[in-house]
Image (cartoon, rainbow, N blue to C red; front, top):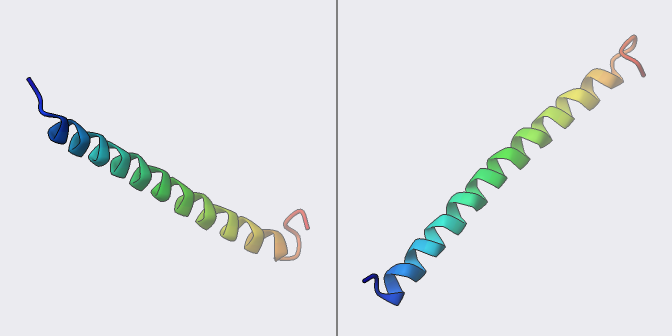
Length: 47
């Protein structure tokens, strides 16, 4: 039988994992958006 504290710690670590995954995804998206807007500001790139 798993104690409540162990269950809580497990839940927290899962939340941290999800947060880190989402954060990595968000920063990757921001990087892509920045490079896209930079490319769009270059003449001849669908501006």
